[in-house]
Amino acid sequence: MAGEPAVEDHARNVKVGDGLTNWNKLPYFGCPGYWASFWDLTSQTAVANTTITFAYAGVYSITFSIQFTNSDNSIHDINVWLRRNGTNVVASDSRFSITSRHGSVDGNVIGTVNFVLKLDAADYLELIWATSNAATYIHAEAAQTSPFVHPSIPGVICTIVQVASA
Image 1: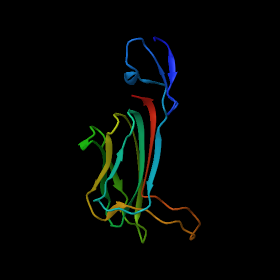
Image 2: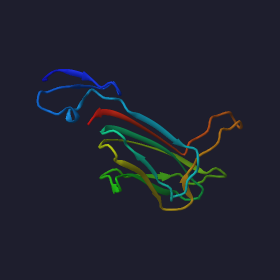
Image 3: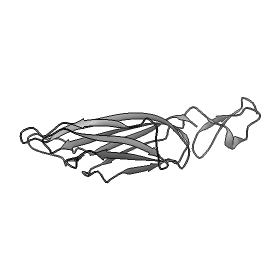
Image 4: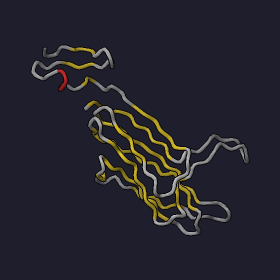
């Protein structure tokens, strides 16, 4: 019925009837709040990509940060972008100029980007990256005790939060 709220037992999501639309076609009221957080504790060369498949349709905020390292004495670029279902996402590319090695210390840059995308159930995203020089790579590091104690450094961190239902 129009204006009648109902709660799905299995997921505790609310829908409000409009008197015309089939239950399965009604949007959820508010946001179901699906989310995920991933990280990778391995260093990667420019042949690795990551795929994330979405079980539920919705509008998602996708944020990633990547720890880039450059062992060369010149600055080199790395590009990172998204592909949706095998197709590049328009205007999703970012270029990071990775600081050159200085003295005996490799150059490091952390690249962080956020996208908001409407996705359908079963859509998949790939995080793609390419570099102009193999001396630049995604760097991960184990926890350290010297010169000071600190936790591990993931090469990639990706968080996904649903911000609206489909």
